[in-house]
Structures are given as C-alpha cells and as structure tokens.
Image (tube, rainbow, N blue to C red):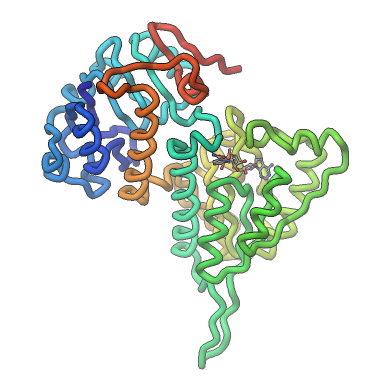
Length: 377
Ligand code: NAD
C-alpha cells in the first residue's frame, strides 16, 4: 500500500505518526511510504532520516493523498479535503467526538481511532492511551519540579536541612502511576487517591500512601469497580467525602498532580477552588485534565487550558499535551503502536484485509463506507 505520513498541524502538536524505525519496517513489508517534508522535525527526525530508510519526501497533498494515512491527531477540514475517498486513516481521532466522526464518514474514509481499543492484554502493544499517558505522567513531574521553587528531595547540607516535597496525586491510572514513580525517584513524599479499589495496591507498591475514601454503600462500592478498567462517575456523597479528604491533604502538599478522567464524560472536579485558596503559597498544581472539566477547567476549576496561571499564590499548570513535550520518545512509542495495529488490518501480501471478528479492530473502527459505526451517547 501507499502509506502517507503528514506533518501534524494542530497547535502544540510536535509528534509524528511514523519514525524512520517504523517506516523501514513498512518498506520491508512491501509498502511505499511518502513523508511530508518536515513531518518529523519537531520530534528530532529530519527528512534525511526517512529518506535513508527508503521513504519519499513530499508535500501535504502527497502524504494526505495516500491509500493509508498515519496521523497523530484527527484531521481538520482542510486535511480531510486533501484525503482520498476510500482512504484508510489511523490516529488518535477523538472517538467521543460525534461531529468529527460524522465529518470523516461524510468523506467516505475508513477511520480507526486507536484510543478506542479495549484495555486487554492482547491490545497492550497498540495501546496509545497507555504509551502517551505514561509519558504525560513523567513530564508532569518534570514540569512540576521546574515550576516549584524548592527542592524535591530531602537534603542535609552544611547550611541546614531542606524538607522533601510532599506530592499529592489525584487519579492513579497510567499517568498517575508514572507520576508517582517519577516523583519517588526524585525523593518526594507521595500520597495518591483513586476511585477504583484496584488502584490501592498499585499506589502502595510504588511506595506512595493511599488516600482512602471508604465506600459507605453497596452502590458506591459497585460503581467504584468501573467498567472495562475505566472509572465511572461516583455518587455525590462519595465525591463530597473525597473532596473533604483531598482538601485536607492538599493543604499539606507542595505539589498536586491531577490526572482523573472518565471516558466520554467531563473530568471530575477533585480540587475545588476553595481548597486551592487554602494551599501553601508557592505550591504547584499540574492538571492533566485541563480543558476536559466543567467550563474548560480540569480536575481543578481554576486551571486554564494551555496556560500557567497563579491564583491564591498557587501556580496552576494546564498544559493539555504533555506527551508532545517529550516529542521524540512519544513519537517513537506511538509509531510502534500504529505498526502493531496495522498487523491486524493488513495481510502478508501488504494488502488491506479488515477482519470483522477482531474485537480490537471493530472497537477502533469509527466509520466506513460513509457510515458512522460508533454510537456515542
Ligand atoms: P483514565 O485516563 O481514564 O483515568 C485516570 C484515572 O482517574 C483512573 O485511574 C481513574 O480511575 C481515575 N479517576 C476517575 N475518577 C476519579 C475520582 N473521582 N477520583 C480519583 N480518581 C479518579 O485511566 P487510564 O490511565 O487510561 O487507565 C484506565 C484503566 O485501564 C485502568 O484500570 C488501567 O489499569 C487499565 N489499563 C489496562 C491495560 C491493559 O490491561 N492492557 C493497559 C493500560 C491501562
């Protein structure tokens, strides 16, 4: 097949969907690859590196006009216009965005949104949410260390002792667990909260303290189990008790890293404005849910998407694409995820063969032959 790798056009998007490593594999499998000029530049992959493995460098129209287009983010209307009807598209295509799904279907393309893959063992090697959230969790701690005006580890010096930073992590999925591990390596003292009972053991195994909000009813316990590994919105009673405990812990914390998400819903509010007003001056909040919460905030309503703002003496960081700030490794892992997904839809003769009975493929398939195949509420 003719595979196209366009330059990503969305603001702050520095990743690329194929690296010279994966392009080399595509070519060895019998595909031809056309990479838009400078597509890999922001992730430290110059055109020459792609050419060296056999790719052709071309324009946006060349890359978007391929039979199979590999992207990081969903195409905008301008990009869609340059694609061929019947093209196949792979990317992180916002599966919950109905208007985007409709636009892709109207174009007639076959689109796979890899975020929709089930969180199963077989899907692990193509799990884009995990590969990118892992990086975001790491980078969140790096950004926090940078914004924080004190040390992370405890230091005993001739000029006196410096206390270790206290870090509170809200949401211990892939990003939150990596944030715990990274903050631990820097010597911080860490507490973490999650709604799912399975998270307790994972938090403790990384050396952090679990902030326990006990379930008081069978309903709370049942909802907290989540579905497919994902959290569900908790009843207001549990959220209130959690908010009270988070407020208490946040007052003691120097850094809060919030990562809580519920697929297809607004991100829950976990760090209320009043709590921020009671935090220590100079504290830092990194809100990975920025832009996904109520009124454009994140897990904290005071966060502003893609901005660093100071409110009540607390620095609130709302970067929405932390993975993109580690562009080279984020691209490398993402490109391997796509390579693994392609094994499911391309046969040994390098021809498209989309199975109808593969749970990963059917979960990711957003639209085909002009029809939207995913029904969002
Ligand atoms: P996510 O990004 O959807 O959410 C982040 C975290 O926020 C989750 O841990 C969630 O429980 C938590 N959260 C939601 N509401 C909360 C609240 N009110 N308070 C505190 N925390 C709250 O999650 P994710 O990182 O994508 O992980 C989702 C699930 O997928 C997890 O169960 C994870 O173990 C699982 N997973 C499985 C595999 C696999 O088996 N292949 C791979 C990766 C992840």
